[in-house]
Length: 121
Figure 1 (cartoon, rainbow, N blue to C red):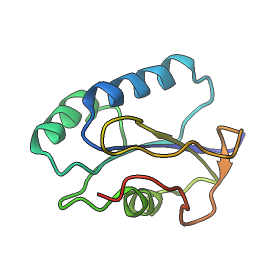
Figure 2 (figure 1 turned 90 degrees about the horizontal axis):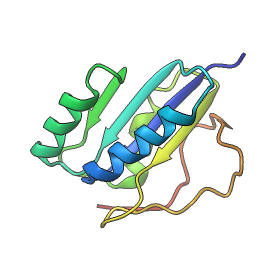
Figure 3 (figure 1 turned 60 degrees about the horizontal axis):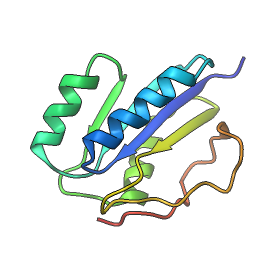
């Protein structure tokens, strides 16, 4: 079975972050090798929320300060990927939104840098 890394990109929406992670954990049945969360809001309260809520669950928590924007945040998270496949989730809503993926499969082969469009801080 191929190993998969779960990455979630976030930008200052604790409600959507909690909903997205909860939905994934409640429905996923595939073993995940590594969990990565990257937060791009540069907000200290958001950082505290994430550390308290997900500090023990994620292998890597990344906090951008200053904000890097969606594309550079994705690139930064992907630098930590060592698996063949990545499941990339994004919170949708607020000022940091991202377009939907054109790939219908939730697991996509690691290709290096991302070309996903979205929040540019």
